[in-house]
Length: 507
Ligand code: MN
Image 1: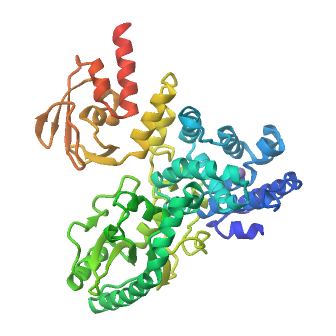
Image 2: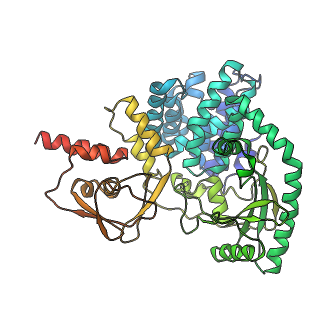
Image 3: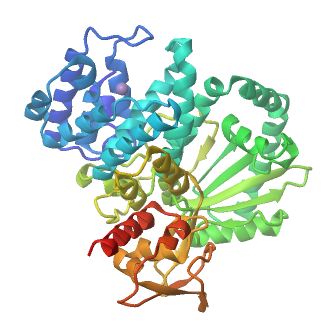
């Protein structure tokens, strides 16, 4: 453990960044010196590893320092004032945010939604709080086997039910995958054993076939003149396999992406060329070609997917993307905007991966050249709209209702709806024109009188479909009615409708 391991992950840290980090590092080591983990290791190991994960996600000096200090108020009674004096307001705000969350505990719906609510309130002010919390949890999961048995199940379940979906929703696939794989054996031991057995019976045969196909794929790309930057391959993880097996009567033959190969190419044009070349050589499975470049997933994921018959009786999924898309899909596309310390945004690529140990992607890299910084988009404080909405929910609604909103807005699948001008709004499935109108602006929602879907006048309780183009018709004299509350799906729409109904009652 050295400070250099952390600073090496940062991109262009300044002298003052390094000084602040060194101070946080030494401070944490000192105040936690008599403090041990269940493993018997010094507690500082946990703080060090958490900070390293935060650095790898590309966050700046304040978030990394806060990672080193995140347990100092709660566990060793350091005063807030001391942190402010030594490390400044930004670091204190982050440490305080993480401390206030306390430990999210899965203890039935009521307590669960209460801590979720606190989580989103803290995160809606600054997404870095959520990032620190995720990294803290990831290290705790990596060391879960040291924790007393009676606690393991609860911690593993809440990781699967809260933290892994949050990582997914933020588009940080690396953390999402690792959290799922680490939790699974503790959360559902019997199911895990069952999946493990199924995999082990087939593993060596599958990997042999995958290697063989991988080689012919590389040859095929050369023959077709599609330059490939790098490729890697994987056998599907146990938990994600389990999620699919459960829905397919435990029939292994119905899983089409157990084997996958990723191809990284230089630009979007080459993505489509590679897809064309592959389909020219191997026959694709019908209905398995997916263009997430033209239609990204709601968490920002972009890639082309296809599944082909390999010719020896097997099938392999192929994912084609640029290296930038790859980096975004692993580390979170929207995340970079959340890091206010832009000049120190680290570029996690080309750095030794901290995530490699558990993951089964095995790489063949052709290019190690330095790549440019990610484009930083302005998405209002860096906090995605759905986090702000959840943090902003009316505090008078009951726990049960909050929980339902959470399930609808957060964990459910999302659809993309377009304005006639081509702007995109992402909404939960089964959303109506009412949800769409409020997602654009509360003033538009409050004066909605009708909607055109695909150019046709439709009723305002129409369930919108992914890709619909919706035009909202408004009138100054129009107002929401109580019926709208039953139609609306999103929390933001319901909140505004309630407010408006309240105002109508008491002018
Ligand atoms: Mn911790």
